[in-house]
Length: 595
Image 1 (cartoon, rainbow, N blue to C red):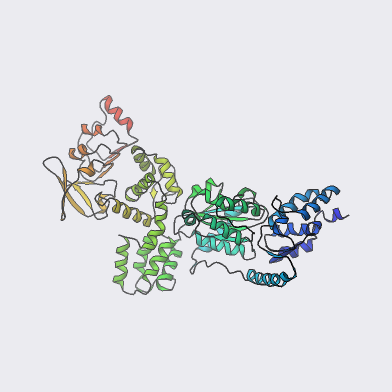
Image 2: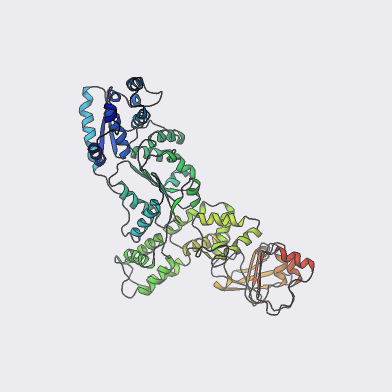
């Protein structure tokens, strides 16, 4: 019977032919819905994900729509007849959805014979355009890309779902967009219903997210009325995405709302769809329910060397005599593709070793603008408290235990653990080998340099700048929420007769007391801090001293109620805690190391 013939609905030979087609042309007329074969073919066309070019012959797109907006007199009559006869009842809802979906596609309308020649010309031009699909430019020197693609595909294959939604997460300049473009080219070489949306974060900041929605509708060949509001775009996208297999890349997302605006039916996508979301913030992916996440890695030494040399020398290895200086640049870049490209390009055509050495010295003080601009995006997105934590890490906590930073921040009345997790989620810090609570903190050198540069601009007298060492009296060094003093040149301080601490430089004298009053970290080498320091600071959270020669801790030490970390090398110490008050003080400390 006809019912049985249509039970698997389209012969296998026809399915194979349609599945291998580069695009489909569907002509809708008044009697289209009266043919179950046409409806079955339309449903299969949508399932293939291949581009459909609709031609509406003496009907309007809204006439096909499963909504109250169109007349639907032809469609309603046909479906009513199917229901009256009790035929194809299991397929009717799917066919209605298929007609509804294709009604949003961009197509030509023929209302009279004069339109036919115009429409034929339009369709031919569109077919030629779609058949000449131009791939995205990926990278001139795609070092490490093959390995990244293989790892990404392994993660996506583990989704065990007919719809794959995968995140690419990494710091700025790590190659997220490059990888996404390569994947897009591979996935969309034979698929026409694809879209790559660049710079979504920037569009959202400018209030232009609805323009990205329009671009997505255009790329996916969905017919859409004019709109200027994101919510309107969501409604239109929802109808189309429920009925067609798509390939979409959402590049540079920084908020879950952006994903929701562009994928309003993320959980109802058609089988075979692939969605890739790139972001600097892991929390965005988690909030969107995306569990398959590929984390970008820096390039290995071999690939990093080749990428740098291609940009600096137009060859994969250093020019003779430049091997050692190249190694120093590679050490600075630490495998970050952005830095390797920018610095290598700046050195191209420069054959004077003096110039290379000058540039190497310069980047130790200030990074090129192209690098700073990209890296600073993540910093600018932090709230004020998290910015302070980032600067603390860049200037002081690299190489320290994670627990130390968290304790210090807790002592500053911040939520240290939450702040740390936010920095990790934004790829601004990491823990070596990912051990537990006591992992060692690591940060990319260029993020570190960015943090120290920002800190110096914000507080030029706050002792951040990397060429200062502060000596309080002959043998004591101090870091005020800054970098360990042993890394700096020296300025000498001496207490005035009034008990103030004065810095003498070639620019004159300056009292240090305003800075001491806010002192939170004392990292000393030499003698224990004297009483002049203790009088000034009541906010000290962390005290370290390489050498404490006394037998007892000074009494004024107990006045530092905010102190949480005390680390001393005290070979002569006889008594640590004496009275009960001392024990109360000791209980406040989160970490005590006395050697």
